[in-house]
Image (tube, rainbow, N blue to C red; front, side, top):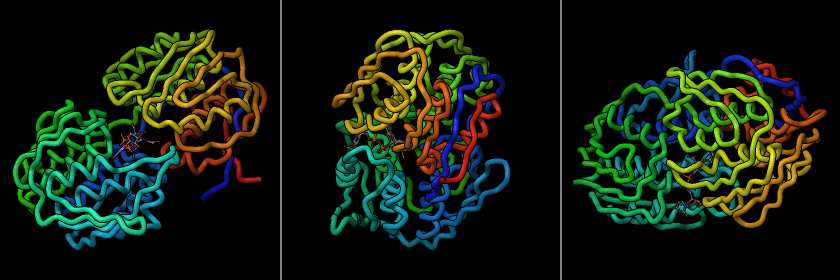
Amino acid sequence: MNDERILIRRAGALHGEVSIPGAKNSVLKLMAATLLAEGTFTLGNVPDIVDVGIMAELLAAIGVRSERLPGGVLRMVNSGEISPVAPYELVERIRASINVLGPLLGRFGRVSLSMPGGDDFGSRPIDMHVKGLEAMGATFEMRHGVVEARADRLHGADITLEFPSVGATENIVTAAVHAKGTTVLDNAAREPEISDLCNFLVGMGAQIEGIGSSTLVVHGVEPGELRATQHQVVPDRIQAATYMAAVAVSGGEVVLRGARADHMEMLLRRFRDMGLAVTDIGTGLAVWAEGRLRSIDMATLPYPGIATDYKPLVVTMLAVADGVGIVTENLYPGRFRYVEELQRLGADIRADGHHAVVRGVPALSGAPVRAPDIRAGAALVVAGLAADGETSVAGVHHVDRGYDDLVGRLAALGADIRRVPAG
Ligand code: EPU
């Protein structure tokens, strides 16, 4: 863990161009899916973030080697010598380690996996993963924090998720590609990163229909029939939204190279309601902000709704907007912890259960704060751009898990921001 801090001072409008790296929540899943076939995989547009390194270590322990090449390329080699045991020391560090469950169970018929870690948003169960895989013939035992799953050969099944869980959708699909027969998954999550995973699997030879919709139909192929492939990771819509929020609170005009409007439609609509001008320029998005933002009400929902991961950014924007905004969290009840940190910066926010009432103030005032998780950490950095005096954000290791050089990218746009060692 590093104890560095990020120091920010308000420096006015941002200008220039920023490239949007590949999505953390896609690349980690693509990496896990390399367990499905032998050979050499090449992933492009891979973000330089800590979680990619942790996933690479986890996969190395299981049997897939990764090598970073220049230009955002990750080469991964599955030599076929796989040991389907995911050790606790690595699993506890990222939630996405749960994504080895589907591929290992479908391909090798057994998995031993500690319960995954990741951000602490209260309880994050895996009951939907388990129920879906059980419907396909798997059996589960949970003992001493370890999930032991087995299946001779999974079979296709009709599965309806109670809630469009991202992780459950991914595990069921990656297990179904090798199941005997057809799996129909209803109420599947539809996030762009799930479509990216499905397209990657199709590139490996999997047969999947309904990609991008809430009904995914997977026709299983025989184990051994899938092959290694090359793939470009989709751009990270949450990182893109972070730079938008930075422009929104600072003013200015910035081009987000690679950002995709079609992955962020609902959010863009609400950002425009707040007064941000966003134009799709084909190769990315041009964002322009002038004057004070207007408050809106907003609720998080599964895609195509507004993602919970955007919420700390929106709350930060509302903290300096004109008026009162009510934000409702529908996914993680415990995900308002960063509010106390924003309050330290002078934000007027009352959070209670699933709701936060944000009364905009003209400016925040810089103070030392601590990032409680990845997205909240980035939001505190954005808040620092809108604060008088100096803001110091500790807990930078959280930010590094999901952001590829946030500080360097903001500095290149004209922000007064730097990293300093602990102390
Ligand atoms: N849930 C259950 N049972 C399950 C699965 C999920 O009750 O079997 C609940 C969870 O507890 C949570 C909700 O359903 O309250 C949503 O969970 P989901 O499975 O959709 O999310 P996830 O796969 O655990 C991914 C992202 C999160 C993001 C959510 C929602 C990754 C590694 N993580 O988590 O991203 O917030 O989807 O969009 O893809 C982040 O990147 O900072 C992050 C936390």
